Length: 102
Image (cartoon, rainbow, N blue to C red; front, side, top):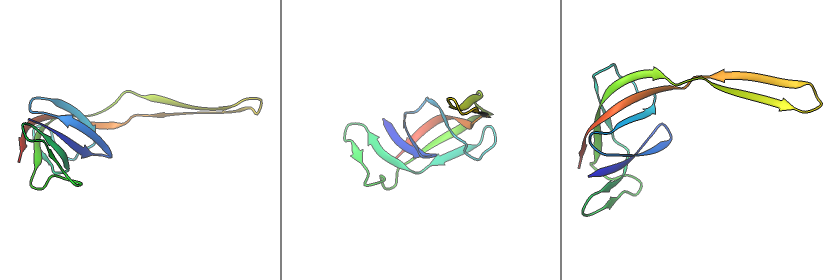
């Protein structure tokens, strides 16, 4: 059974055993997190939520709290002597999916 969940403004297709890198979720290493925004449950009868599937949730364990590699944001306007460089490191949480509850 798989599920499509929404967290951090993004949607993910998950199933038990997957390790997913989500936008920052509060929780220390080894704690259990419950994701309640389940949009679709896949299986023999596919259940589609409008907008969410009632009573469904995804339970996972926090594996890592870290920051991604640095990206460079460079703005440039030709012939105007305008150049700006900024960097950004996005925080993420790696979650191992334990089960999909119906």
